Structure formats: C-alpha cells, structure tokens
Amino acid sequence: MEVKIKKRKAKVTQADCVACGSCVKVCPKGAIRVYKGLYARVDEDLCIGCGRCAAECPAAIIEMEEVAS
Amino acid sequence: MKKHWYDYLWIFSATYLILGFFNILFAWLGMLCFMLPLLIAIFGGDKMYCNLFCGRGQLFSLLGKKLKLSANRKPPVFLHKKWFRYGFLAFFMVMFCQMLWVTYLVGSGARPLSQHVKLLWSIKLPWHWAYYGGVAPWVAQFSFGFYSVMLTSTVLGIITMALFRPRSWCVYCPMGTMTQLICQARKPKTKQ
Ligand code: SF4
Ligand code: SF4
Ligand code: SF4
Image (cartoon, rainbow over all chains, first blue to last red; front, side, top):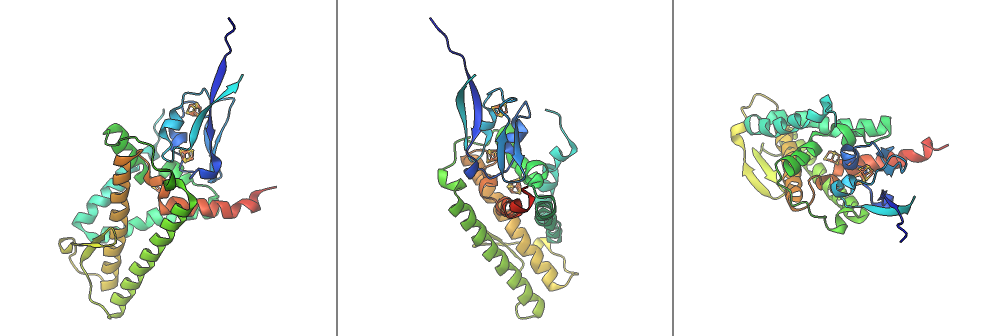
C-alpha cells in the first residue's frame, strides 16, 4: 500500500486579515509575519503546520491546507 | 517563547483603567494609546503597535487564555468584513467628535461640567468621586469623555473576548482598522 505524505501549511485569507499580529505571537517557528501592517504572510519553508496560528487568529481567517511535499 | 519588556505592557493598560476610578484626570494618559499607533503607522508604515506593544490586546489574551475566560469560539464572519469594520470606525469617530464638541461647549461656558462616565454611548454613570477640581472645566470634561471611550471599548472587548476568541476586539478595534488603512494608503509609495 502506498502512503502519501502530505504536509499541512497555514494559509491566510489576506483580504480578510486585520493585521493584528495575534498569529505572530503564537508561532513557534517565526513562520508567520505581518507584512507592512497590511496582512499576515506565511513562510512555507518555516511553517511546520502546527495550527497554532489558525486556532489563535481572532478573525478565524487562517486555514490549514494540505500541500504536496 | 522569550518574553520581552513590551510583553508586560498589559500592566499599563490595566493600571490605566484602575486609575480612572480614583482620579479621572489620569484619562489623559490614554492619549498615548491613540497617538503612538497612529504615529507608528504614519512614519513607520506598519502595525508594530498592534503587533508588539498594545497592552490592551495583551490584556484580552491574558484574560482569555491564562484566566480561561474565553469561550474560544470562532467569531461571526461579519466581524472581520470591511463594511462592519469601517462602519464601526465611522461610528466611533462620530461619537469621538461629539465628545470633543461637548468638551468645547464646556470650555466655552455654554455647558456645565458633567461629572459622568458614559458607558456604551448611552449609560450615564455617576463618576464625581474621581474628580477633585483644580483644573479648567474642559480639561476635566475631556477626561470624563475620553475615559468613557476607553472604558466602553474595554467593555466591548471583554464581551467579545468572552464570547469568541480572546483578541476578538482586535478584529474591529477602530485603532487597528485606522492603522491598517494608513498602511494601505502608504503602500503604493513603498512599492518599487
Ligand atoms: S491573527 Fe489573523 S487577522 Fe491577525 S494578523 Fe494573523 S492572520 Fe491576520
Ligand atoms: S501553522 Fe504553526 S508553524 Fe505554521 S505559521 Fe502557523 S503557528 Fe507557525
Ligand atoms: S487592534 Fe486595537 S486592541 Fe488590538 S492590538 Fe491593535 S490597537 Fe490594540
């Protein structure tokens, strides 16, 4: 049986982001940052898919997405 | 995660609210929470204030997470929609201008000083015990008005903290919306 390994990454709906930075404070990897006060951006190379930012975001606009590794 | 000095600014926010119960003139200190975010957004082009320094956001985090007072539910979708955030900002600004107008009226002698704190723009609470005189009436009136703004936003923030996620207030906080708008307005200039 073939097991496909998929990685989870955080994905921000930038149009809805309020740039509050709550996500930044809980990310253990420094993978999510607020870009110029506009919206949060995820560095997919650093993101370990822990989902903490998604649980923290007060606007609930971060989804955990599966991406092919 | 490593704690920084600015992670303790919630103490400032909490102290501020408490001081208002003892001497309303301390309300003027709240101007810092208005000027700093705007200045940082205008000259720095980012929301560093929200992202790092805001003690109020930290306070809601603390109440919601450490003290577990938050239901941690997803807030309704409209809360982060632009129409709601901009609408709330507009409403907030109108009420703020009205507060300034009352301050002006008291300053010009057209109105007597009202020693009340107005909660949620409607509930008048007697607050005379926190005022001892000694300043111009408009200085005192502004204190009552400004403290009303701060207390009202804290109460709203605590309600949404309890109902939804801890920092739900940050989604519709007028300061947060305003600083984001300033950053958006600055964006074209910084693009190559
Ligand atoms: S917590 Fe949510 S709304 Fe706030 S900056 Fe992060 S993604 Fe944006
Ligand atoms: S999923 Fe975890 S590692 Fe990835 S950005 Fe969110 S908090 Fe950081
Ligand atoms: S959105 Fe408002 S309460 Fe939240 S961090 Fe920014 S200024 Fe503070």
